[in-house]
Amino acid sequence: MSRSAEELVAAIRERAGAEPVRLGLVLGSGLGHLVDAVEGVATDYADLPGFPHAGVSGHKAKLVIGQLEGVRVAVFGGREHYYENGRSDAMRLPLEVLKALGAEGLILTNAAGSLDPANPPGALMMLSDHIDFSGRNPLIGEPSEARFVPMTEAHDPKMRAALRSAALSEGVDLAEGVYAWFSGPSFETPAEIRAARILGADAVGMSTVPEVILARFLGLNVAAISVITNMAAGMSDEKLSHEHTKAMAPLGAGKLERVLRRYLRDLD
Ligand code: HPA
Image (cartoon, rainbow, N blue to C red; front, side, top):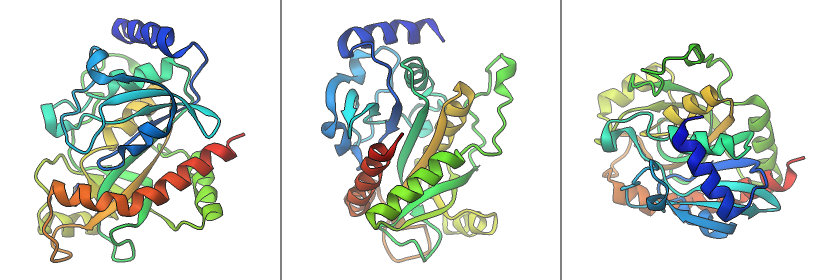
């Protein structure tokens, strides 16, 4: 663990208690309201040196540690994206802190564009796998041998099975598919979307993949769920914008919250 992570962990434990955290949750654009549902101690990212500035609107830049459905969780109300400052490892410190707080697992959420007409806006898609179209691996420059992280079952089969059954119990449709990471911040072109489709993508977005890589590097089990906010570029007449993403996220956010709460309640 880096020195800065160690110091942060000590400071966080002092405020939020030393009891280990079981699970981390990263909330995507327009999905931040869960930070307010946790009964616990909130700390603004601004008070956690090295944490992202989370300058993207639609993100609540705070870390909350406490109970959700009887499980001790660390909820990250926002993330830094590669496109903000050109750092694909911007979430490394927060995830190091999560690991050091005792977490075994991490659930990532995001807003994404769909390439599959069967998953329209409002649908939920769990990531079965991903494609790094940005080429910006967050472990570039990491000196240790641990950087050669196997990514064969990066999206944890056990967590995915539990999320699938949580969705089933809640009567929520949870699609599964491949998420392709484009760097952003511009949206994709229709030609890029057609290419991504041919190459096997079901959804596209500007986040999550570097966090999955970092989580596996740190030994956290990880699963991710996209809330589909739009059909990808060229697939509908909708005009894509961040405003549109934020406006559409609530369509799926309620279902996502039910799935996550059920997942936590059913954890053994
Ligand atoms: N592309 C990339 N990121 C996104 C999209 C999209 O269509 N929708 C929401 N986030």
